[in-house]
Image (cartoon, rainbow, N blue to C red; front, side, top):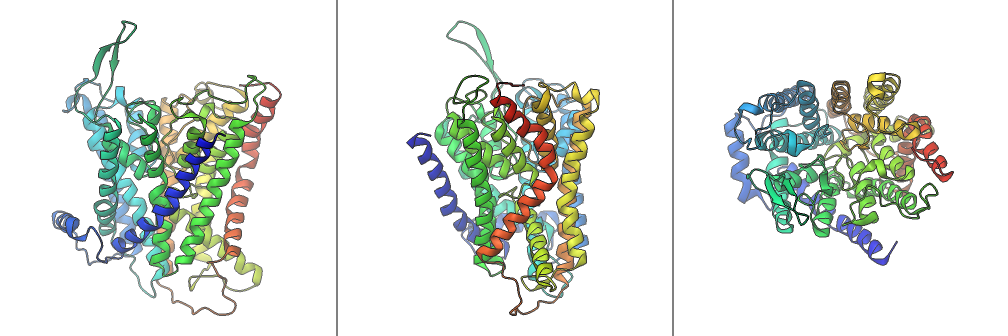
Length: 563
């Protein structure tokens, strides 16, 4: 790597480490109802939302009421996006006169954006109207991200509160997440991206004459507003089919840096929000450190894979599938971050990554999107692993496990195991079924271990609610649209529902005072144990599948064979 490459990585790391605690402290004040910087300028919007929707902000919910509100709201969001697609031909703001979207693709897309996955089996600029993109997809980018934050807040209250049957108000958590966090940051980032040249217009596609004298149609549209929230909300996807490799979606190195920063900013900041909320800032730092170590380890391994010699093509660098405006290091920095954060946006094609870098991207998702993870989703996902770690540590010393004063018993561990293993089962079962069905295999662009990687990555991305793809797989078929849509639903709600059950269970318990036998969760010993549990669970679950995919492909590549 060159000096400029190293400086870019350092600048990115420093920006995350400096900005995340600041934003985390701000969000802690927002979500605990304390006065903050935006209380006065935006407080009217919060109060007006409550009045308009008939929400009583001081009314708290049990975990069952919270769950019912969440499911009802997300179901309504799915229906809205589905109807917009199947009827867009007859709706306004469709200057390209795009036809209605087929029902299977509409189902997949509606589920995708409702679950914060943003998997796209289509080219946005040639499939969806401006109305569908803005009213359907952009709105879901906000509310799906806010749903993840709401579940994290509910679980945090369950851990923190004593002998109560309530865990907060879903509508209040949603409103505050959007009004004070997602909306202001999106406006700031959107304006910055406009300044860098990201397109934002309602004009139809522009036809130009190229320097070769040929006619070319250039799609445009309201991209900047969607790009801002897709990155900040760890939604991913892309306004254009080429995603963040498209010059109208990511035109400059500055826009590239800002979009990468936005991917990890809120997920990283929520670790500090958690530490502040539970009155244990050191524990928040430990969780951040665990996430950072796992992310940086994946980044280093990916960089090694991309900079190693490739005998099959006789080169030491791999520029295939990379956007040359940004180079290899920026492409790998993006791939390591977007797959760690359940974002799914890409500025290079992951199918063209070296087997090692592609395997790291896949493994990041397979771990459950907890290396920073999705907005809110990363935190409630890693808290499941925290509970599992505390339980295993308690077994080792022969005492009832406790976490922040709450006893971790059978009900909590049952829900923890369910939340961790169900998405894993969806990945392996889904990929296994696809590997034996001709209708699924016909979509492959490659055979051998790389073809297996395409299938594994697709189901990992769907069940992990990531949304990125290996790009070689033709997923726009009825089979993949339906099956991957179901995988997204299970991957999202099979984690959310156990977390809310745990929140309700813990909220009813008393807090035990710390004693000499209490297992500390704010030191390096706990950090090492947590990293060990995360990697061991991931390795035991997925090592055989990865061994048949990226690992075998790497050794065959070094022998001069490619697929």
